Length: 170
Image (cartoon, rainbow, N blue to C red; front, side):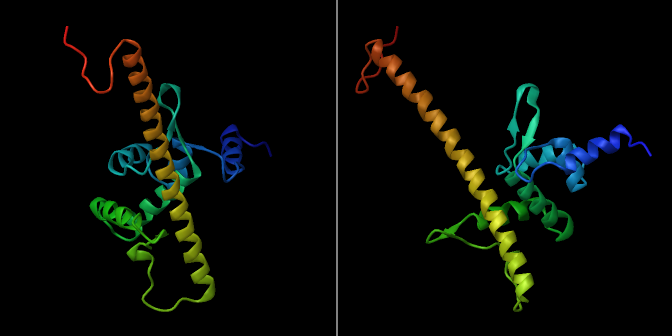
């Protein structure tokens, strides 16, 4: 039996490495949500920062996909509102002596079985890695801004302006 081109495309997507970047259509299909919802979530959750190439084409990192999976689960499965998820993500980003504070939903009321505890630990680790990646992206963005500002200062100094005195108005 011949495989249709659509089936081949799905097979290729599924064969991608776990560390490969995903397009918005791949992520939308994986999460079973429309693409416009992903774009909307980008406006509501600053932690979601897909890489954008020419023409605005989005490429989601594995950390982005993990974060989107968490957001989807909180909104659709656990019944959180967008504001509730925003608060939860903000609170889970806080640290105590360098260790991430687990999200309230991740703290169990009863002792867990070893397999469940390992699964919960893996999930927390994945979430922490996603948050680290988001922080790293924010730091890279800040560094780029500082490099630009340094170049502006150097240009101003070459034109005779000093850091102590503002330029005279023309």
